[in-house]
Length: 587
Image (cartoon, rainbow, N blue to C red; front, side, top):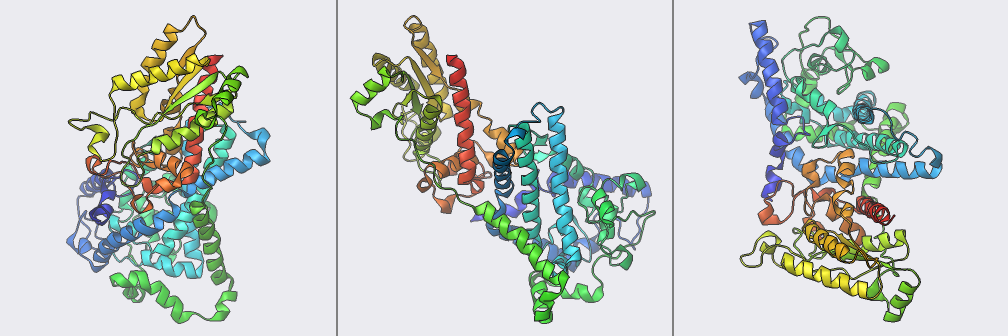
């Protein structure tokens, strides 16, 4: 509960948010420099950095309260509706293109400067979505009633950016997720693999650079124009201040977020020749309608209710308001929450489901490769069951065996090192975790491999779903391979399954940050378990643990963004990595 209450303030320490402390500091530094250059304070246009009249204005006080309550509302409701939208659309786009245009799959593989191109394309796609949503909010009458909330600000501070009605937010997130997902899916299809773009913790470097170059001055009283040339390419703080002007000549101008050429193409670009005096807001009469905190939420609905007449539904701009909103938001919500059926474990490759005669016959028939999956019984935060690794690796091992052919799967080894028992450390600090020593684990692997060799298996492959299993598997595999090298038996440690599966790259390319991905019971393993064993997730506790104390929760990363469809893709990356390594090792 406390974490939720303080969550809005975490935006100041999150680099993917506009009010990240470093972006605010850069804006303050630029503002201070501009003030020194001008060597005076113009009280009429309030260009000082932090005048009391601005910070304590009723409009600013409403902004602060609205920011706090709206971030709580978005975090508990709105963001959940769109948490995985771009990823789902990307995957759906890639899947459909592979079905419709298989010959083009991978046609741009090896594309020169691929990272630069993807960085620019994703920045353009996201920015156009923001521009187009903004354009619709101004041009469609009923959408404008909600967007008035943002324009009713009488003074401007960096917090004013959050003065957005939830209806506005629904449209922006819908179009943003749909368009960026479409772009990402197309490029993934054409390149033939997960794309790479230049980022810092999942945030596009172009966006970071834009934020650092005084972004927060756009909602301020510090005039900073970028001149006639750059103002045709990028929206300067001065241009966005003009967008907030109550003067008729400034209405519906400069709707872009980062790039100004969208406005140029749509005929809404306004480049100031000199510094202009600006009065912010909608005009005195309209501003009064939004003078209280509650009016920011309720006034659009009140206005629409009082003025509504059935014949309005036949007016194109009003009918279009409803149509555009529904056509963007409803599909977006549906796609984000679209469920997938739990994946089914293959039945035949598992030794434990076979009789000894069936195993013997399989070996004689050429099934001389066997996989030894290792999982563990460990805590996985408040939302994931202790046997997470066992469910996941049993499924993946079965699919790896299917892909390889002539391969069987040994029972999952569920007892692995999880930390010292007394005194308890590692996962052993949490109830239910079961641990053995590294020596005992190596002995268990050794005995398992020797048993399988005795029955006639020629290739024994260790596949560990947990990081703590990897070193012991490697040591045993190398020792036994050396021991049996003259007997035609090879023992493999399939490290690519865990260490080189491209999961992090895939998630980063889909906009998730490293903090959101996490390392334990975060997006990855939560999504994987949702795909193979959804009953193993306690949905009430499937929340963002990225800011939690690991020693208290036993989890990190943002589990709230995990979903079953993402899980199937992440599982497939593991499976493909393992199949590739085993195939190459046996070649």
